[in-house]
Image 1: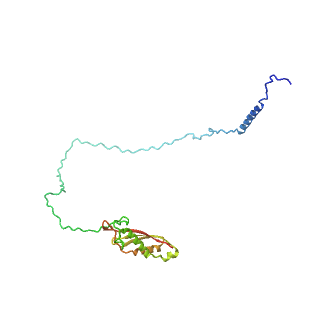
Image 2: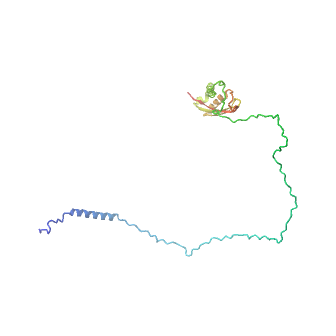
Image 3: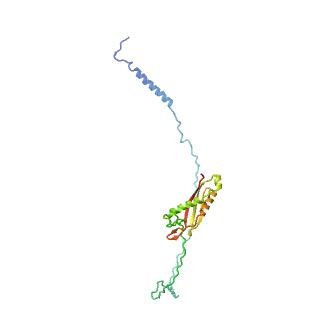
Length: 235
């Protein structure tokens, strides 16, 4: 072999690196060739617009307004005649409403004042000044609490479970509302419950309430509505 011109120069020193770089470039070009895409360019000017040869434009109709002629000018007479009104003027006399100090004042005596009974609206039991007095609560300190206690005793004393709801297993609360009238009697009974037989029994219990002393508002007897639930429960 012939000796090298430059013994220190090794041409195969970086051959492996150059081979790898060339291989990467070839693979990149191959990948780009496979991924290369082309698109058809749309023809925006290929369509022709069909327009008529002689376009005719329709003009809007002309509307004419009938304007009335101007009124004739007033004719001014050459001579102005003055007319004198000879009718008499009648003046209306208005009587004064003020009292006459010279007139004698009559003294009114013996006026009878009739006291008409005033129908007062019902006052709720919770806000009335003097609550209705249940028989037996006349001397109670707290008549309101005594009224509630006597009502519960009356219901327990007269309570009787109806036979039909008892056999059918019907139970529930019957809400009762009634009015304590101005004479102490019970009226305007209303009920609402789960069964008509339970409502009838609750109405019977309320109708057995004794006559009470009516409630008073400002010293005047008034109607007092009262509500209480009666619970029908099977043991």
